[in-house]
Image (cartoon, rainbow, N blue to C red; front, side):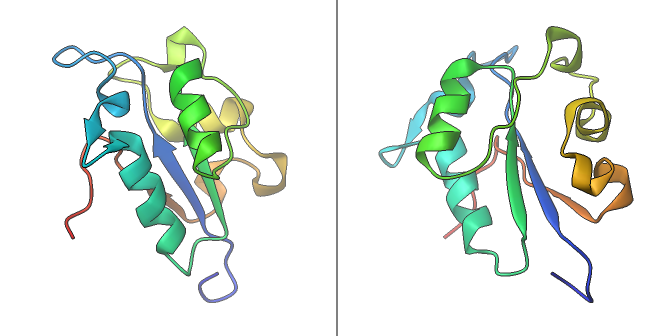
Length: 116
């Protein structure tokens, strides 16, 4: 929480990629790429909830293995280059937040692992 505000982190991780299919499952330093993002988000003390948003059952399994919520799989229409996470959460997201547009949302890009 920051200043009494609930902080929701959304990690968008599509299965499709034009340049590198299933890039979020590719291993980097022994871990799937998306796992680096998840572990970095879990270290952030201000995050109250971390959700992995994906259209891929395989990426969802990795997310659950690393301890984040995967409350739904994105439908194909919301797993395109132009689809935004706020739209997808507003459609299927956690009801207590009223959608991510009403709470501070942190987007953690799974495509770029954190520098250590």
